[in-house]
Image (cartoon, each protein chain N blue to C red):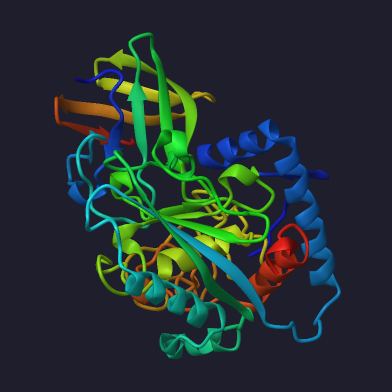
Length: 295
Length: 97
């Protein structure tokens, strides 16, 4: 939910350490910050303009980089295909489990009209026994591989990640040489090495959501003050985990409660199955502006 | 085996005595939520890692002091983040009170 807290004409923001660190990252990369500001401006302008005509279906050319040390980590073509299939269902709202959406939220389930076409797979042998969130998987000199034409292709690295990390992303407008999404090979696709409860391809759905400028639905603060800058996701206190029973009421958001079935929460793969209309607007604005090269 | 080690929240093992942190070199179950972590350095400085908006952990500066009630880690604004009440080479018990 979009929120503002005003006291005496001053806009207050409460943020956790991680948000402060993110803001510092933006300060350190002026071009990234400028791109994010332009994108937020374009998004709010489009939101204020009201309902637009139905957007065309776009195809994002997708490159998968498999970076492996063991034979298991060198995942099969079928597993990669299963991930692309899951992305196509989730971003076209043709995923069958959307039928589980609670009645009050059903009208918000939205088709992003975004599809993904696998155009290239690279396979890189590495000595690393597990990458972290430090982008080493995106550089040949540190055991990985550089992105392929990141201005026109979405790059998706699949590798072993340490610490049980499922994946991470880069928001639009960041450095080109690290642009893309990283997924753990144990949480990629719906077959092969994918492990329950992360074997429905939703790690990539969640991370691609970030890649297209979506924020977590709780706004990344440890209370009710954060915002995902989306008006049709209820305000909520923090992430949900597992497969919660509906409703989960926080931040006075009853009776319907948190939209924990949204792809941008932290629930299990089986517990998330929808984007909202305003989230789709954010993603489509991104594709029309900062990431226009993809389409 | 205490300083300069990255201690990672093994939240699956939390119990009534506190939260459990283990060295990053170990293995951890898959989890959507990025795991909090911290490092304590001998000079009194510390680094605290929390999940960021793009799911990667982000580091924040902190400091620590040894007190009769355990090692207390505070953020740059002076807020108490963690109190380490028990430590072994393989596990810390941490309270957030």
